[in-house]
Amino acid sequence: MLKLRRGMVVSAAPLRVRVKDEERPAWADQGLVGELREGDEVVVNTEALDLGLGSGGFDIVHVNLTRGLEAEGAAGEPVIKLNYSSLQHPVEPIEVAHGEATSAAVTRRIPVLVLFLHGQLPPAAWAASRMDEDLRIGFVQGPGGALPGRLSRDVAELRERGLLRGHLTAAQAYGGEGEAISVIGALHAAAEALGWDAAVVGPGPGMLGSDSYYGHGGMAALDNAHGALALGLETLVAPRLSSGDPRPRHRGLSHHAEVVLRLLLSPVRVPVPEVAEEEWPTGEGAGAAPLDTLHEVCDDRHDIWVRPAPLEEYAGTGLPTRTMGRELDQDRLFFAAALAAGDALGALAAGGRR
Image 1 (cartoon, rainbow, N blue to C red):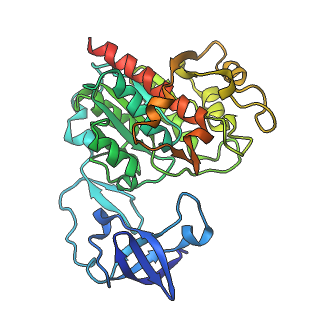
Image 2 (tube, helix red, strand yellow):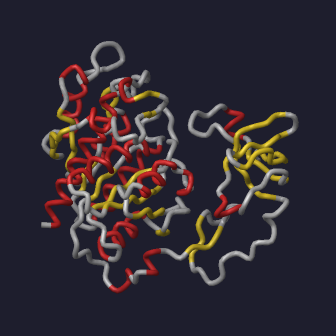
């Protein structure tokens, strides 16, 4: 059963809710539950905070009992997201709005960068835009991490700075500037209807995970890459690399990236950062040399593409420099890999505009 509790809003910004005698941080998707004001009586889901989850350390407002029970809903929209859950709501999918049924073909061969973690998005988007500030780069948010599109502060900042020109939420992800039934439908619309020069596709904040081979949100990258490949789009996969993760399975080349690269049915390009040898992890927990592992995994199927990774320049942008609780200087390889991937995407997109 859902772990739902009654509470009272004690602060709207930042949102804090008193549950019994404890004041707790909370988050509400106001696109679903409406405005919240101090004194409102709410029902919150307390599971994540009670479990101490690092990426979900707050309560989620399920319903505002004071002012959230009179909404009329959206009339006439043809598709339901979060269907058959208590948060189901209708959306107008971009596949219908832009007439995908007119043609399944893609005439604009835009490049697509597939991410494993939401934290790769800011450095990748910045590096791609650095190639050409007029590039129209958009983000397709799919499954694997948080589903609400409005949860991401990173997307909001990138949109404000003009580093992202659009945000679609696909599959059961919701709350973007546009909704798609599927990731492949979102990519089709990005190329044919929205005029994007390039697309980045990946999960929202947080990551569903376990230490099993296939049981993690990183597997969404496999479906995302296959969707792009099926449309005939140039597909890059940003490898998840780390020089600072204390978990052996994520140090060096993450097992998330390794399993996806092994399972891909068609070749992709894999950007690798051009960094000094000392940036690559060695010693206990690093396993085999990560670059050697990457070459072994890619073999002669995937194209390893060495690209620059301007770490110091990125560090001065004011964009996020923290991942999994580690600052840039504590995990330089993670940010270097994302920067190299964005640089590769920008190079392909800029070349396609000429």
